Length: 312
Image 1 (cartoon, rainbow, N blue to C red):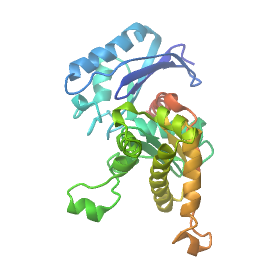
Image 2: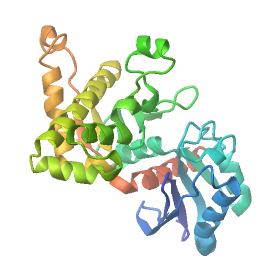
Image 3: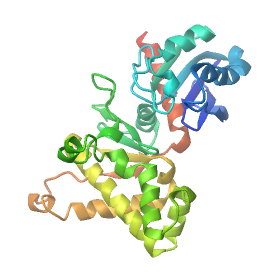
């Protein structure tokens, strides 16, 4: 057993989070640095930020496990897309970091990392077919099919943000509504603001759910409208894949009210056509909350790194 630890990095749009991971998956020495923001910042600024994390612990680590946004190749970390880190698009991130620090490096999509963490030891442990949805700026996540992380041909499986709600309208309007467009952070805040007469920029998920729990009518109506839309997406996802369970993560998942409303909305869906006419034959989505919260991506990156090392 190595005395050195692994460095796990979670490359978020606001912060780069990091932790040292021991052989048993225990996270320690956690911290974060601000994310260099595109377009003001460049790829050089990105590597400077990573240097500030790696340099102090370089002699303590045996490798680096990265959770990153976007559609990417998990062999060399090539970033086909890079989410908010646009300066990384077209970069083989795993290769670049490995050469920079002379260490083995793994890179996996952040939503897929969260799915790995929840499946291996979190809310989805024991499931064979399951999914994670991370509610944030968009809707990220991952799929576990037959006990294995499902990446798909292009690595895009689990990129729920881009799923069209109405393809016919989307084609006509050269875009149209998507899951991210109805259930991402920005549309959620705008929905609440439209009901309360406030500015969306003055709101956040914590404020909204605190007010909903107090029974503020306009806020409750907005939250119900949001969860109904999300429940519809979960029903559709479950119809396609017939999952054991779906775990919800992201900042607003900390509210018990979110899951309570979601479950009630799913019950309503199961009592209307076409579900009601199938006499219980359609699968009902089982919804739970992610266990690891902010640590899911770090832990999932560690699990992915270990799997790659075993393959090699």
